[in-house]
Length: 284
Image 1 (cartoon, rainbow, N blue to C red):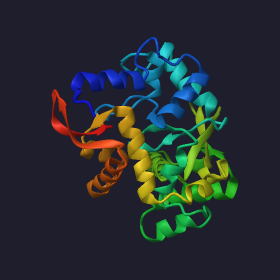
Image 2: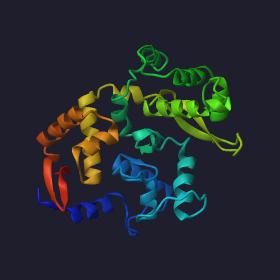
Image 3: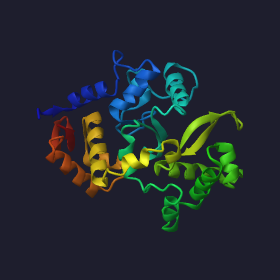
Image 4: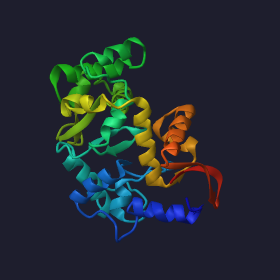
């Protein structure tokens, strides 16, 4: 592989991330294609986490995120995400690092294969609860969805008996837990609550019934290979430890995965990049 420089890494990322005005995403259809292309990305850029984001792709350059509800980037990023919730064009939920993540439906089985879901969504969660891997609050929320079907967040809190204001942080934490575990996801918006805006949540395998079967043939090792391969070819180069942190993997698992990809000729281990001190895992 030709020697890399820091500037070359930046330039190649700009293309992958669509951070050029000539490449930026300008329609909802292009947004869907962008997510398919990168496989997975954040909705908004996350500080100190290297990853494409829909926000950057829409902006076509680096633009600081905002708390305002109006503006070219926020109206499209947030608006298109909301409009797509019930259209099954991608997975949206708090997945990577517990932050808003978009995943192509074609790529989603790789993440599902790494989850603790084994195909029986009505029973698997109980095994996790018994071993202490699932909180009591998450169990209550999940069972409310099992019993009643898709629910908006206001009613979901009530059915899970977490509607007291003091329980709001526990409810939000448990919802994130269920999303990072690929158990539930937002599937729509309901005009309820103080802001007349609340996510509607559903159990993931009920929303996408073929997902468990599509994930079943994928081993954990192969799922990691597919995920790390796509990640490195998006970011071009990354310290292995940083890549492991993105996905919450043990460093030993990340190293084994990187070595498997190197054997396939997909990445270069311990690559030296001019202008960067730390050795990198680089796209081949």
